Image (cartoon, rainbow, N blue to C red):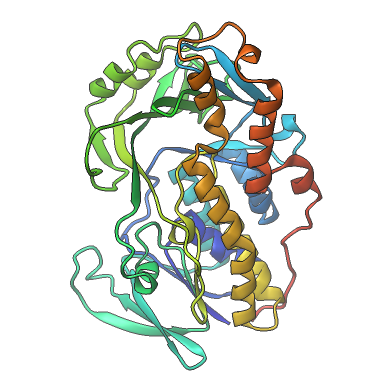
Length: 425
């Protein structure tokens, strides 16, 4: 079986490793950029994604790369605690939750692909279109010399299956949904960065503070060093009045003082949020966008995966995690189904409804609804959260999202593995 993967992001690389693990080794990953570099800032890998990467043999590398998350805590804009719960091993999972640098995780996956599938990654060569040719897929690729310039020669290659992991601006998705337009913006602007500052709480906690109008998220990417400082990842968020979002570019640097001023009053006893933002090396701006769920991902022997299939708001720490689960699911199906068509159909049947529900849930704030409820019922703060939102409501919101996203502790721990042993083909 010849597989072509469009995109060497987290989803595409995880797909290559997953296919290799089931014995599919004739794989080429075509990536548009001419060099893979550890760009971006932090993400959280939830236990269901850590399980899949562990079963791909990457547990030691993950442990060396990330900080195991101990606790997730929600606060209002005054620093009053709304809800706190253990995470990872402390919550009864068989696998930890990690805070990691997105670019460093991508490099970890790249290195694993290069070790297991030498030469599989072809840079500077985006997939620009596909079509069905009998029982095969005809893939058009722009050559390295033209990548990034819109010019250059094109060539064609055939494959048995094509997996589009080429992101929120997927060329293959656009081919099937030409009138979809730009990603959907919800009026919120994000500013992301990292800073070396004193750790907060227990040094391994993830915090979310604010409500649906303005929010701050932070978690450590490293343990404290000899100077007592840790690398902290943060996301500052605020609803803005712009009619249209600025370009979708994670690398759009902005004046951090402007963001500091937005959070000037957010100084709690255990963290000084303006000082964290001010300590950032740089602050990157990005509009909070997603895409509407679609009815189909699969067209003949090609399908969508990750953000190309289900770009969602960065709520609930699920974007990269869901792409990894996509990758493992599609490999499992390709290894066990009677045909490629049947495999892709079953992959879509399993994954599309779950991710569509998550996309819509994230638009309704997902597990972060606890912060909005606290704001709506007590906009000036509270002395006891139980006077504002009941413990039963808080627990129900958290549990509902875990079940929807596939990381309820009991269900995840008891779920059969997606690993499959298959002869090389």
